[in-house]
Amino acid sequence: MFKLFLLDALHLILTGSRVKPLFSYFIDLCLLRAGPQDLPATGMLFWLLLPLSLTVSALLVSVDVGGLDRGFVAALLDLVLMLSWVWLLLSFKRHGPRFLQTSTAMLGCGALLGTLGLPLQMAAATGGIHLAALGLFFVLFWSLVVIAHILRHALEVGMGLAMGLALTYSVIISLVINFFFPGTGGG
Image (cartoon, rainbow, N blue to C red; front, side, top):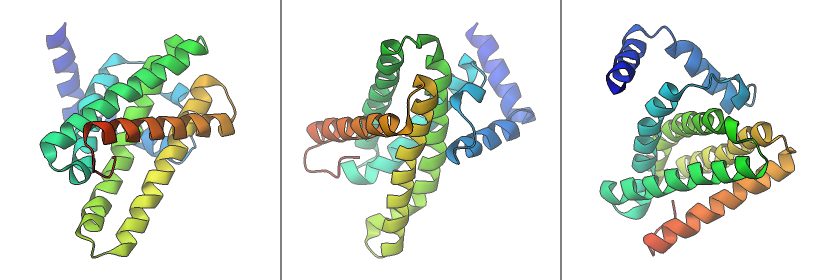
């Protein structure tokens, strides 16, 4: 079964037949023009995006937590907490079957927005470019809006409540990162 998964994943990457529509979908989702319900509920996409999202997140936070190895641990904590948070919220609303689409949407958008934030994070970390710090702030703020948008659709709640849930998640992950990596920026 794992061999079949790898062959399907390799075919998808090499042919690119589905890559462009998926990339366009994630752009539309990040621009709030699509919802997680528009994403195919496929485990293959989830498992392809998981390491991508983890890598981008590790690179993004490595500057804040003091190195790539610590960045990987922080990104792993973030990933586990994000997936747990999504599962908990969906279970509470009795929308458990939406977990795969919702978490895949969060992983894809996180990887896309994180990739946009990487050069800004590197420039802001050097302290020389204040515009980069402002751009990074905008990407982080927009990430919260996108998370709220995904949660709004997945949980069938208003945008205000979804934004509150996204902010709650952001505070929780910041507290956890600060607990494990005291004296850092908090991810």
